[in-house]
Image (cartoon, rainbow, N blue to C red; front, top):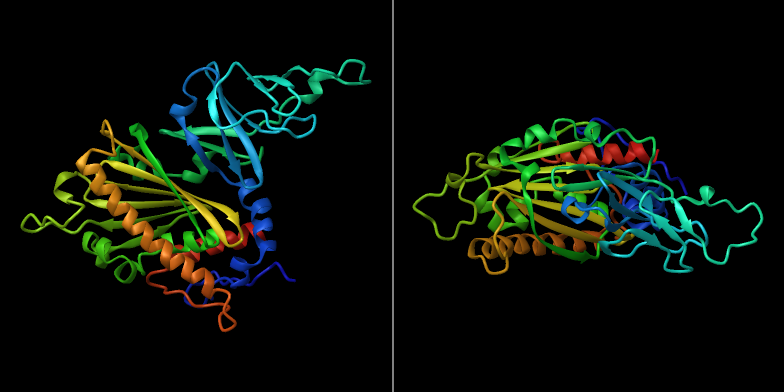
Length: 361
C-alpha cells in the first residue's frame, strides 16, 4: 500500500485527500508518529498546575504524559516508569512525589528516581540512569501545551501573531468556566475539515447562519494556523431570538482560530472555547470543549446568559456531529475517493491538507 498521496498546492487544480486517509488504521498510526508526536498539543489548564505539587495527566497521540508544578518550574514527563512501564500518575491532583502504581517506584517532582524497592543487589543498577523522560511544556494565557519532540520549535513560533490577533478579546487573562466532551463516530480529520470552512454553515447550521454575516466570512491561512473571521449580524428591533448581540462588545465578530493539527479556539463576546479533537481510533474521535470568560459566572449551569449560550453551542455541535458521522460513513462508499475544493470557501481545508501532506511525506 502506498502511504504517500499526491497533493497539489494550487487549490484551483487540487483534489481533496483520498478517502483511505479517513478509513485505514495504517494512516492513523502514521499520523500518531509523524504528526501528533511532533506538534504542540493543548493538554490542560494553568489553574490545574498553579501550586507546588499540582499535576495533570494527558494523552498525546499514543503517549501518556504528566505535567506538574515543581516550585516555580513547570515540568512535563512521559507518564511511564522505566522499570516495567507502569504509570507514575493518574488523573490530576497534588503530590510531593510521583509513585508508580505497579511496583511503587518513587520519583521526585524533578523526575529523579528516589526509591526503587526490591532492587537491592541488582548489578549495575544506578538510579541516576532511571529518571523520568522529560517532555517539553509551556503555557499561553490560561492554557498548558506539551510537545513530545525535544527538538520542536517553541510554541510561539507555531502561534506567530495569534496572541496579537485575539488581544482585543483578552483571551490571555480569561478564567476557566466549565467543560463538555463528545465522542463522535468519525475520523478526527473529518471533524477538523468541517471546522475549517464556513461553506456548510447556511445548510447545516440555520441558527448559526442567523448570527453570522456569511457574506463577509473569510479564512486566512498562515504557516501552522488559520483564522476564520465571521462578523456578527446586527440585531434589529431587539430580536429576542438572537444569541449574539454585536452591540454588547467592542469586537463585533467571531474569530475561529485553528492550530495544526487539532486545536481550535472559538473567541467572541468576552468568552473563548478551546476545542481539542483527540483521535480514539481511525473512525472515531473525542472532542473536548473548555469554556473561558473575561467575567466568569458564579455557576454557568444556572446563569441565564450562560445556559442560553451553552445550549446554542450544544445545538451547533449536535448538527456538526450528525453531518460528520454521515460523511464518515459515506467515505467508505465504493463511488467516492477524492473530491474538489471550493477555491472561494475551502482554502482553510486545503491548507490543513497541505500541512498533513508535509508531515506525512
